[in-house]
Amino acid sequence: MLKIGIIGMSPGNAHPYSWSAIINGVFDGDEIVRIGYPAVTAYLEANRDTLGIPGAQVTHVWAQEPAIAESIARGAGIMHVCARMEAMIGEVDAVILARDDPEYHREMAAPFIEADVPIFIDKPLTYSREDLAWFAQQHSAGKFLMSCSSMRYASECRIARQEIKSLGKMELVTAVGKKDWKKYGVHLLEGIFGILGDPVPHSVRHIGRPDKEIIHLRMTDGPDIMLHLFMDITGTFQISLFGQQGWKLIDIRNSYAMFRDNIIEFIRSVQEGKPRLAFEKTVKIMQVIIGAKESLERGGAEVLIHKNF
Image (tube, rainbow, N blue to C red; front, top):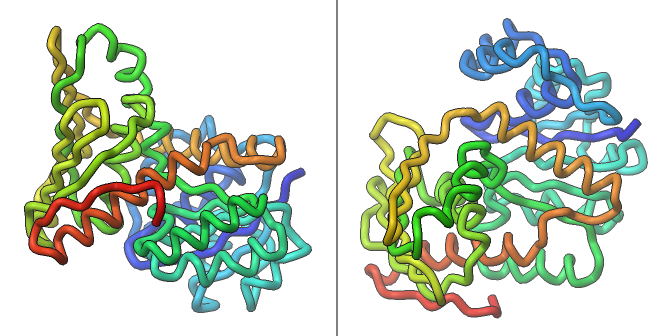
C-alpha cells in the first residue's frame, strides 16, 4: 500500500479534502459542507461508486492550523494528523502539496525534495523565475517532483485532442475562465497545451488589467492563443479551437474526473519511480505564467519566452 501525506490548505482551495477523499474512497459530506464546500460534497456523492484508488491511501495530513488538519482528516478518513509537516518524512511514500499559493511552494516542498520523498505540487508550481530555476535544478539533480493543473487530464480536452486533426490547420485558440491569472491561468494553459501537443511558446503579452486579465500568447509554430480570466463573470472554463476546416467549443465541467485521472497519474508515477509528465512541459507553462505577470508589470510589453529562467 502506497502511503501518501497531504499538505493543506490555502483559502478557497478544497483539494486537500476532495483529493484525499478520491484516494481513500470515503468522505464526510457534512464536514465538507460545514467548512464551505457544498459543491465538493455534491460531486463526491455523485461519483461515490468510483471513489477509492487501489494500492494507495492518504494516511497523514498537516495544515497550518491544527483545527484545519483535523477537519481534513474527518472529511476524508485520514488516520494521522501531524503537528509538523516534516513529521511525515519516513512515514509516507509520497506527498501531495495541495496548496495553490505558489509563493510558498518552494519553502514547503524543499524538506521533502531534500529527503527524496516524491512530491506532487498543486498548480501553479511557482510564480517567480528564481523559484522555477530552483525547481529545475532539483529536477536536473534527479529529484522526483511533478506539478500540473488537472485540466491537462480533462476528458473534454482529451476528446478534443482526438478530434483536432479534422479541424485542419489551427489558426486561433481562445479560452475563458473565472478568477485570476496567478492561480487559474494555468488551468487554461494546461488544457490548451495538452490539446495541441505541448507546442513551444514564443512570446506573451498581458493586455488586460488585474481584474480583467487578457493574455495574447504567440507560439513558435502554431496558432495565436487568446486567454481571458475575469474575476466577476460566471460560467465554466471554455476553450474554442478555430481551424481552417472547422471549429470546436470545449465546455469543461467534469472536475471530479480530471482530479481523479491526475491523482492516478501521480500514483502511477510513484509506483514507476519517475514522473509520467515530463517536467519540461511544466516549465513551458510556468514560463508563460510568469511572462504574462512581467508583461503586466511592464505596461503590456511583449515578453519573449526563453529556455533559460
